[in-house]
Image (cartoon, rainbow, N blue to C red; front, side, top):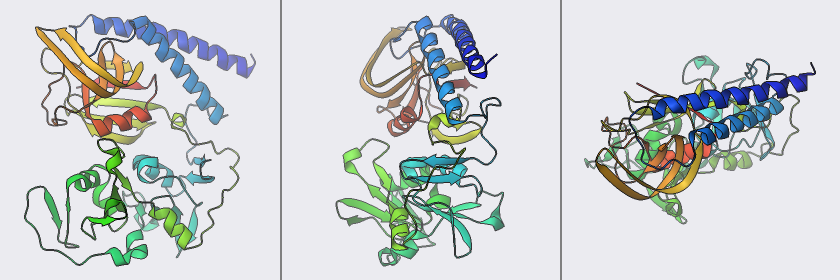
Length: 390
């Protein structure tokens, strides 16, 4: 049989099987006690069909990007991916690609602005917000790839003298540099890599132009009030690009290498796992964990169902309401809603901060911080698998 026809036949058969098993799985969930913060947007059959169709389309895109790899369903061992936005590649020869995928991707490190180069005897690559460095003497350890000390090199004048320990609740003092970290910058620093990624603070918070910023050994964090309450409220400054320009490095786009696919999230099979015992969510690209967040799930009597599900609908905002188990609830303007089965969804939550504490207070849904829910919403698509387990 012609290979193209074989792929089309396989895709059609896969869709039929996904619909069949999807309907069976939904029927099993519906046999359990009703749990739902929302009213279901589709019938079980419609939801299963949407998921199956989306997965078939995503697999077709993956096959198109990775010709010759679709047969075994995995990327080459040392992939090189092309970013047309800046015209540069990111490879795993030194571990840069996996590091980039695990540490915030575009949101934290930005696009590549150079190819890999050798600088002072070390393999490095410049991104919009950082310089990645390969440390072969630490190969096989979490320190194999590190961010360069760009603040020390580019903004030494912003490094401030040490301050006294304020001994205040919610303020963390670093004896190593004599500076403090608090509030939204402390939260961002802890959630997105901490010391290994950003280094120690080397200044206090200060005003710079229109923004409040704080300098660290490897990055500058910026507070953007126009994005308050979203994942973009704190951004990493554009120091990688600045450093590459200052050094006069070759930043012009290069031709896409043969066999190097265009970067897109569909290159790797995505999935979400929710551990109800630890109240923790982990998102994967292939076998690589790329995002994690604490959650709060269904309370007793409204326990979040376990099983293999999939995102079948996504809404940026919706009112949450329902009646079950002698309770009635109404919560307006719930953001970043991702339905996985019936009226059960992953979504942002503004009315409590019990994520990851073990306190379960939903009527079956999986509650996330609004910024985490937005990050997940933008990363997922219809059909993304969601595994919920104890």
